[in-house]
Length: 449
Image: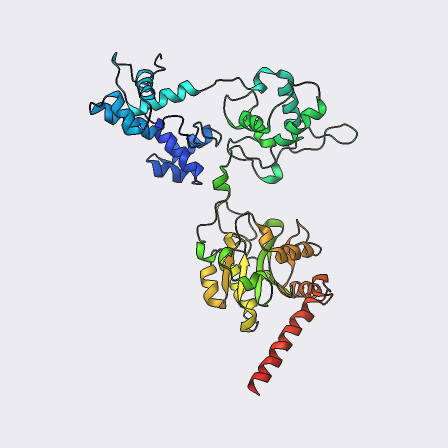
């Protein structure tokens, strides 16, 4: 085989970098782990659109691995014959002979076997260059681009009053209120619609993965990288699946929902709560606590913090203007739940929001066990999610929640707690909680008598 040239010295570093990315590391952490600077790692990740240029899937036993090629290089340098190397690796002698003949380094005019060069040559030979459909099929490319970047029009056909075109920064869209308006079909919708619009034209077919690659990888297709601004997420880079499932660094395995007692799941014993925030305009928020057995609801008043300047413009990367930081939420939960008897303060299950970063101190202050749901799993807090939906009747999205006083929140909570619930046999949450407290009081009197 003719030598394709000298392999880049950083090739193995890049392979290790993308392996770390696939494990869920950030580009900065992956760069540090493989021994390059963080800006270099960020540039590798950005230039590749967040997609690895290497095939990182484990190889089958059919092909020689990089580790086997290292063994071949060591054995060859030690003077082993082809058959001795084959016995050492458990491979056929013809496999070893062919490997030494095809993938040896030849730039010095002599055959010298080195594992890194052999691996690189094998990968070059295994490539199957194929021009993307979006490059060779102008009609298909136009169809895809129109459904990604098509203009939004009013019912009469005139252009909608869309915001001015935003600048594509190569990493992510700008502020959400400045997002460009476009037809914005997802790649999966485009791929699924093609057979409907062109049932007899097999040339008008493309997979959603091919569309994503044409968007994220430079030179992969004819679609401009700027069109990633038309995706619903607005991501200019693909996020590895392992990274998307990553939890917060203040959470350990001991506080995950898998460690929660079984009595919480079956709702047999009151005193287990679910917590969350509902957000409003300008970063304002209200905290919600829902008891799993009785569905009794308490609302946390989180006003803007006095120490922050609310009159002038908000400083970038400055302090939060609303009082739903970790310390404020910790104090609000502790002061609210402390009003309850001890047997109604057993546990609290929350999502992995940054507002719960002070959970260790909250456990001490409120004598309350804290558990966290898995990432992106709101169904693990079903009572809380349902209650948040009910609260949107009073606090719609886009409302400035800072205008409500604590008394207003108490009034809304009392309204919800006085509504009959089908799941409670048409009792109200307040009645269900009172009934439980009465049973405990009667049990206490009987035990002392």
